[in-house]
Every structure is written in C-alpha cells, then in structure tokens.
Image 1 (tube, helix red, strand yellow):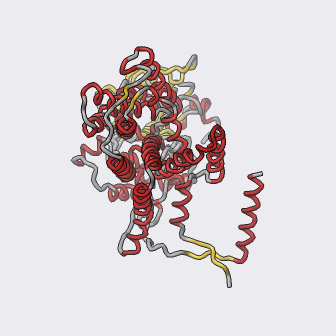
Image 2: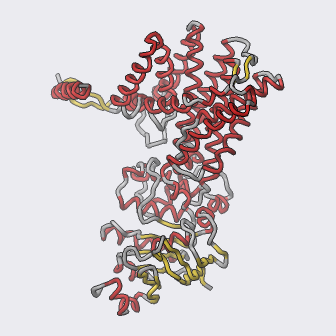
Image 3: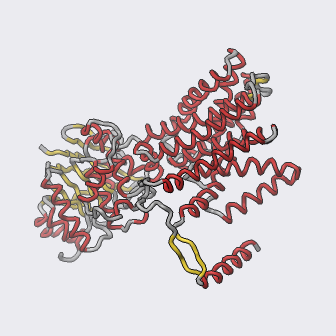
Length: 350
Length: 247
C-alpha cells in the first residue's frame, strides 16, 4: 500500500514536470572539484557556513530554553550522537563494530572506579577515562584487527556481554548493583556545555581528519585493504589508530554519563549502546559522520515523545524507523545535503 | 647477480599443487613475461613473491634478502610493487587521491624526507605520466566512475608513485582495447629505460613478446619452459600445452 502511494506520488510529480523546465541555480561555488573549494566572496562563505552554523545555534538555543526534562533528553541525544559518530568513523575505516557498548562501558567503569575509590573529581576522571578507556579497548581488540567485516563485528558484539557477565559473576566493582552515589556535575549548565561542545568538536575534528591526506588512508582501507597493503601501508597499525580514536570518543561518553547519572554498573554494557548508534547511522546517512549525529537527534527525542504510548512505544518507534529507511534509503543527511547542493531546479514555463 | 632469486617455490591448495617447485632468476632491468593457461598458477606465484600467500616451501630473495615470511606492506616498502589483475582502486576516492595513499607509504616518505605535506601536485604529475589528461576533469573524478582503461592506468600509477624497483603487473592488458594497449606499452618501455625490472603476467602474447626479454611458461603449476620470446614461440611443448595453434 505504501509502495502504491509512493508510485502515485512519483507519477503526479512527473506529470507536473511536463510544464516545467530545468534551470541551473547559481550556487556561488563554480570552481569546485571533489574537495577543492574556491572561496572568494561573501556569498560563498555564507553558502558554506549556513549548514554548519544553523544546527549549532539551533541546538544551543533549544538547550537554553528547554525545561529540565528535555535538557536531559538533549544530553542523552548528544551521547548517542557521539556514539553514532564514532561508529560511523570506525565503519569509514572498514571496521564494522557491533560493540560501541564495550568502549562506552569501559570508559564508564574507569570513571566510576576512579571517582568512587580514589575520590577524584569529574574534571580528572573524564579525561583519564577517555584516554585509558581508549587504550584498554584498543588493546582488547588488537588481536582481532586482522579480522574483516562480520568476523570483527562478532568479536565486538561478544566482548561487552562477556565483561557484563564477568562482573556479575565475580562481584567486582559492585557486581550486579554497580557503583552508586558518584559525584555529580555542579549543575545542568556545566553538563550541557561539556557534552554539546564535545559533540561538535568531535564531529568537525573527525570530518576534517578523514578528509586530510592522513585520514585518506583510513578510507582507502575500507575501500580495499589488499590494495592499501600493496601501496606499502601497514593497515593494522592504521586500524589500531582508528580503533583508538573511535573508542576514546565512546569512553568519553561513558565517563560523562557516569557522572551525569551518578551511577555505573553492568547496564552500561547493554546492547542499547551498540545498536542505537547503528540505527541512528542508518537513518541519518552512513559515511558522512554528520548523518549519524542527525539520526541520533531524530531517534532519541522520538523515543521520548512516544513514551506516552506505553507498551506500543516500540511499535511506533519501529514504524518510524522502517518508514525512514524505505523513504530515504540514502539517509536524511545525504538527502538534505543533495538538495542543498543541487545545481538545478524545476521552473514553470510561462 | 639476479635482483630476484626465486628457488623451489611450492604451494598446494588441498590436494592440488598450484605452484610446483618453480625456480626463476629475474635479472635487473629486464622484462620477464609469464604466460600459461588459466589456472596454471601464475597469479599464485606472484602472490607468493609479494607476500599475499605464504608458500609451503621455497625461498624468494630480493637483492639477497629473504622475502618469505614478510607481510605484503613490508615487501612493498622494499621496492616490489604489484598491480592486481582485478583492478583494486579506492572507489570512494578521486583518482589523484588514490595516488596519495602509496605516496604516504614509509618507502616514499623516506626518500622525500617524510611528513604529510601537499602531495596533490606530485600525484597529478604521476597521473599525467600514465595518461590522465592534465587540465581535464579526469584526475579529479571519483574512481568508481572511471572507465576500465583508466583504472588499469591507475594501478600502474600506484606502482610509479611507490618508486618500485620491481614492478609486477598481473594481466595489465586484460580487458583493454588494442588502442589502449598500444598507448600503455610506451609507458612500460619508459619504465624499463629508467632501469626498472618488470614481471608481466599476460595473455596478450603479441604485445608481450614484443617487449619481453625473457619468458617463462607455466602449466599445471610447473615451469615448463624458460627462454627468449623467439625460442618460446618455436617450442613444440609450449605450443602443445598452451598456444594450441601457431601464433
């Protein structure tokens, strides 16, 4: 039925086109190859800045005027957005991860342990957990960077579950109950500023990094690892670096959430933290880094809005997901970006 | 002294001997052609030299250094470049960015003083050398939209960027038109003049025999003949095994 409706829409649009012609739009940037921008006028600068400044400003304003409950939702969305960006970064380097929860959980536990046993404040635990969590995750996965595709994915899927059951069985670090009563952030504004800044920095830094000559090698590994090896590149060293960068981002999120919720425990290793970033990437648009972020900002608030449906929540949630994937298989971000950069439009013939 | 000394190279897949006790000397600044029917072990042979497959037995020495046991990237960094039979460009990257990847290898970095600088200009120079028209949009196009002929040139450009001393070209001419082959042959001849050593696996015998110094013939994993192109053409055993009819 949906397909029939879509067909009807397409037919209607094509019929309408009979009285229209294509017109080139002057988008200011004429000399543009795949990655060379020639910026020479105010209009061009505006053209490039607009899609970057508007989301930053919009999120800032929304965070400022929202009630406390929705501010918490924004924080949660930011966390999932960073996990999704990290997932997309790893997938851009040819590593299909099903275990963002591993990196996330390790970061969370390190921050929790440092805070609980050593009484360290959040401005020390978060940086330490970020770096050491990244290192620990990389070391854990180092033996399997040689694996590709689904085999690598399997290992990343299993490791967090193993850690979860391990902690449960040995009762270390609070066992089933986890560690509670950790020191919180001074107030909600500090929380918002830290996570929103971290998210934008991560996004723009990674986007810049991946389009640099150094980041190029990561993309080449995804495209063809054998040819990259035959180009004299040690792909395992590069994969380990990518893994470190990706897991540092997740570990940061974990450490941040530990202080935000004043709690860490085995729920940090649950599948939610692995799967939701992938869903966000799928509907936002894989491969752009910005797409997954956008996807997370669609999915997390949506999940909150659907809360009043009770048990039917998952049904509606799933429905929206399916509609998104069917209607925009390329992802929301790729669709918007294509429309924004489009050089042609339909105009009516008088 | 031979630049590549290959001794008793053997590899079995299950019960099938893909390459069976092959020994070859490749001399510096010569072009060695490898011919043989499909499935006779040519590509496996090359895969073992470049480290993609570990042989069951045998040794490969490059300038006296043993290569067996080294990873492909180490072998590449020693100066043995390899083009793939099935083209393997980085499809998501523009053509000239494809060349940035080998330019970032340890080998090239060492020769240029290192660092990740602005390599676009160097990449464009190399692409021009292999026939990407400078000033056109071709070098800037994403590899996935390039026609097959350009992708083959891109493979060659990768080896030039690596400054490889030994270039192993696995069926470089396959799927190319005669016009395209005739435009690539001068590039290979130029590489020979520059002092490179080239190993070519090829089914296009006419073009190969014109430029090859030595030819070896594979059949069922065994090296059945080695010699000058002229001798190979006249050899009865080779004719029977591979050529079938007179060339």
